[in-house]
Amino acid sequence: MKNLFFGLVATILFSVTGFANTTDAIHPTMKEVTTTVATILLETDNTITEYKFNSVEEFTQHSDSIIDSLNELVENGEECSITITMSVTVTAEASVGVAGGSVSTTVTGSVTTSCANAVAAGKKLKAQLLAMAQ
Image 1 (cartoon, rainbow, N blue to C red):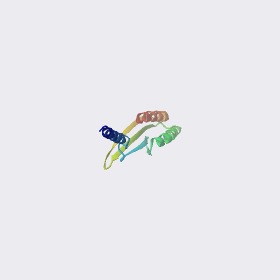
Image 2 (image 1 turned 90 degrees about the vertical axis):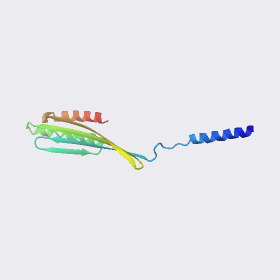
Image 3 (image 1 turned 60 degrees about the vertical axis):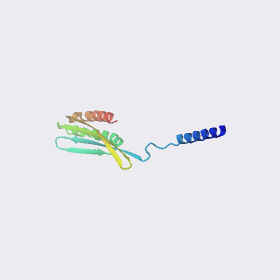
Image 4 (image 1 turned 180 degrees about the vertical axis):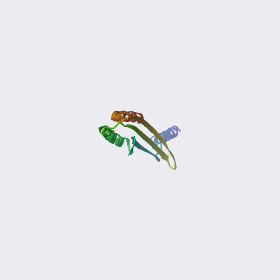
């Protein structure tokens, strides 16, 4: 009787610890996709130029050269004003089986300044925008 009792206890303990050691991912079929889109919109008195980027890294790499190119407006010698608008949108999409959804967050900043101050204002706007988007 004693051996039967200890045998049952041992069998139950091995079963329970065996179940405890099996681990599955919490959501093995869950898929998550994060996309980022960034834009720079430059509006002067007579032109509108828009640049689109597919990632924050691409935005960071190429935006400085775009902002630095605004020095050409000053070299023309004309008084002008420029509106610089920058936007970063991050979209996170998740799905489990057939159910899913997405959440989008957009951070936008805009500054209107004289062409002489455009480079400094553009770089400051970019720094603030990237700080908020992260």
